[in-house]
View (cartoon, rainbow, N blue to C red):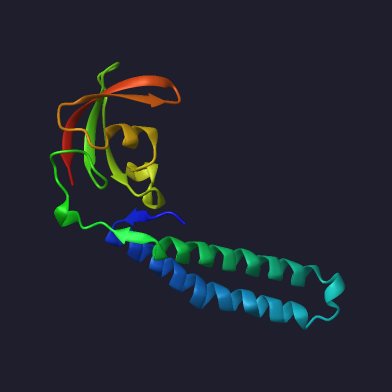
Length: 156
């Protein structure tokens, strides 16, 4: 699996999710399997099949999360610069076509959440902004075509 950059907050959130899945969900699914098994003939027991499938999906999710955190690198926010756009930068950009401004925080893809204005580093807009400085006008190819943005502000 690829290396993933995360904030300490994002890493802690994933660790809590793993702990919950292992300590709450895993025993619940095991109990459902045991209960279905107690009902008799397993060859015609749809409850048993459903519980086993749920167990497989749960274990796959746990494995995926563990892989993600095992390959995570925590970003030290104190070492980040406000001179250029980097991961964890909060960037205020102005759409040169219509003058509208919007603010995004560039985060690891695993922490992206558009409602919180957090965009993943692999998105076209984030990729286009990374490495640029305050005042730069960048052209970014998005699904709608080529757009120009001016970097108005960089903060954390």
